[in-house]
Length: 70
Image (cartoon, rainbow, N blue to C red; front, side, top):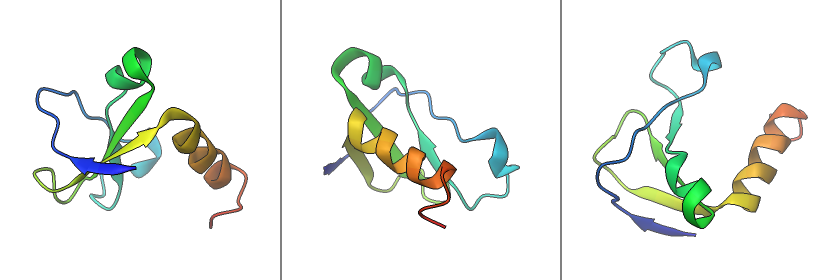
């Protein structure tokens, strides 16, 4: 897990976030290409970007969906 600032990515947040501004955004393109999921705070789009390995991001999302990370 590293921090960086990738350029030219298309960011999106979950449809469950309801555009409230208190969410994270992800860019899916690198995940398909090299197994890395960029994640950033929607309130700080020019701030740090976490570069998570796809399996770690999948485990995080699975934990949220399963109620283990409430």
